[in-house]
Image 1 (tube, rainbow, N blue to C red):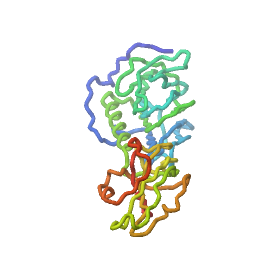
Image 2 (tube, helix red, strand yellow):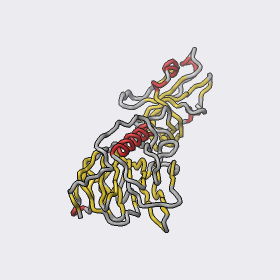
Image 3 (cartoon, helix red, strand yellow):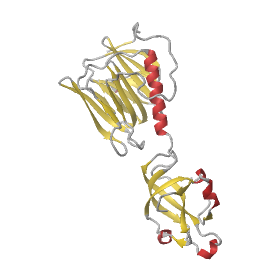
Image 4 (tube, rainbow, N blue to C red):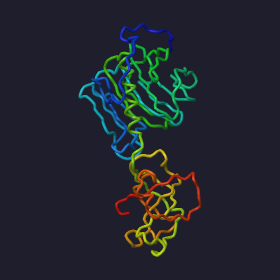
Length: 324
């Protein structure tokens, strides 16, 4: 059952203060629990989490993660009370059920957040596709109030009791769940806005490109290793090779994804000696640490050999693995 009546909440102040950027999330102290879905190398994102109540305690299980590792931060009190404010920071990829609170569904579909089953769903607010979103839900006097990216949706949802279990990322949900936090009290508008800003600042910092990335890649084109006489008086030479990225082992670069075609300069001759590149064969797999070619001017001063077909659309990198 739905009601469009606005509740007069003294706890929701009309004045908004601007939160400082770069603050640690959650900004508001005293969360009931926090799940941060990014591990130390920025690759493990939660896809599905179930928060269940059992004998007065809350248990949280990360049922599915992207990437390696486990949730970086998971804090649950020994005793729990019903949550009053629930925050979810996420990036959707396809439509699906974002969260179910005790049988109440919030669904991402067609660029909007909806409440309820598909045949009777009510549109709440637009969301950002392929970008960070913040949804905060307040449980107040038997109703749920929703805030999407800092704005009240204008709908009050009659809530079933209890609001546990909470399940985030259901059905065919695909996307990155960056963080989940819950409080045993109703946060003010200022606090909601502060938590939203801090969560998005945290996520953007963690999603930022790292200077280097370790990849596994398949060799698809090579520059033959030249004879030493060709590079004299130089004693080392960088050779261009082309790869298809198989997977990202660690680090993050927006230009590097599985299936991406990249061109990597590697030493084919070093200190007057030919390297293992002379034995490279198409289809070989290699794990290497790479960085953008233009990130260090010393590489442009090295002797380079590139016999590959010109293609300015392919990003250039240099292999900086210790073995290279």
